[in-house]
Length: 332
Image 1 (cartoon, rainbow, N blue to C red):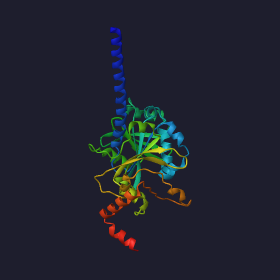
Image 2: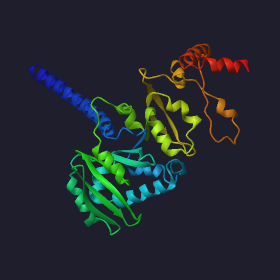
Image 3: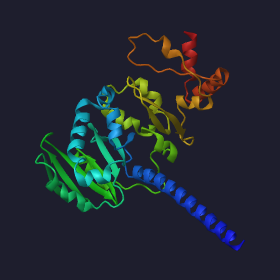
Image 4: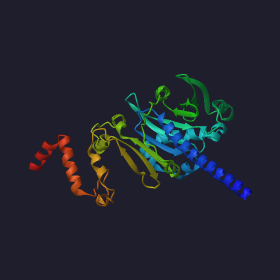
């Protein structure tokens, strides 16, 4: 009987230990992802997250959609650099399988540059980067660099005829870019306490997702002002006026870039047109089925409760001081 009690106690303690370890690892993973994103400068409106492994690259090999959105030149440069740099033993060992974040940043109000943010696996030492010149071919020239007291490297690619900058931002966290201005800016950036610029996904959803897209709608104005020559981009106007953050999952399709998820609305900020749909239930929208095949772009909306939407719309138009325009239009 005594032996049975001791065995039961031991098993009970073992179960508790395993449970604590399991949830501790889950918490660490979630904290790891959210902490990494906190170091991305807050002028980013879009952040694309994926896992740096061959599986991801194989799925999208030859996919023309990413090139159409990001630009063929940028995609080609990143792919060439990945093949040159991340296949080198020190980096391949510690960065394969790690979550990687690509963010878009307006620089000097003239161009949009890409920032890559990633963390190295446990056990990685910055000194490992010093081994790159000895293990790579002559197409890479690696030189030490110090920015804002942080250790980094200037990497010249003989294939691209271009420099790439890699910086140790924090303990185990690295940032990289082709833009020296963006690296300088990112090196100086310090996240503000208790401020989150992006909505984080739950651990399980993040692990099961092929890739994720994070959006800070409040930063879209700066990005669009740099990207578009036409400042009156009406198709995006409602999104620019939406005070919210979104976390979306990528659904793989060969002919479309489809992201699905939810947006968290900041209710303490002024409400825009899209806020009216927060009180509606998701329904199937069939309007796109009747669009002509020559349609270049479109926006379509659906509501589950038309009566409530009409009431909310009228109230919003009054607050937005659009009632006179509405009355004038109806009279015409």
